[in-house]
Length: 270
Image (cartoon, rainbow, N blue to C red; front, side, top):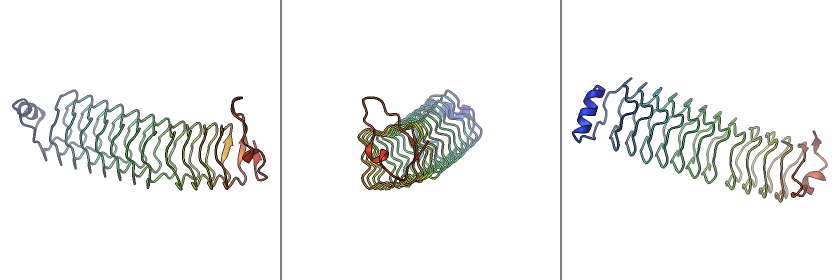
């Protein structure tokens, strides 16, 4: 089916294009609100700046597709294949991407606020500066993803896979990360105010210049972590493992230094 036919049928009131073959089609800038494209083949299609609000792309093939700055809020791409697609700057507020394949995709500065990404495969994706506030990332695969500067406040990360994820400068304020394995990952300059990290594994984690005001770290494993210039005012470190922690505390004057760190025998000063 060619683009002209789709546009003519759409203008005539048709919305059902399930299973359509639109591989490589140029749909950039078009307005196709509420379209049904379930299972459609849009491999390599150009949907840059398209208006697809409320569209149903469940199970569609969108690998290598160009979705930059596309407007797709309240739509569904559940189970869709978006491998290596480009969604930079796309607007996907409250969209459903459960079980979607987004490995190697580009989602830099994409707005996914309150989106459902349950069990989504985001392995190796570029999510720099992405907005994931209040998003559902339950059981999502974020291994090797770049989430530097990402906004994750209010997000659900329970059961997610976070091996070698980059969270430099990310906003994780108030998150429940109790018992999560974050060993060896980059959390430098991250905002972790009020975060629950009780029993979490932060071994060899990079926390340089991280803000951990009122963080709950009871029983956390911080062995070999780098806390150089980290700020921990009022953080709870009861029973935390601080063996061979690297640190140089330079908290703001209004923040007291933390006695649990200053007095621990196993610390290595920078």
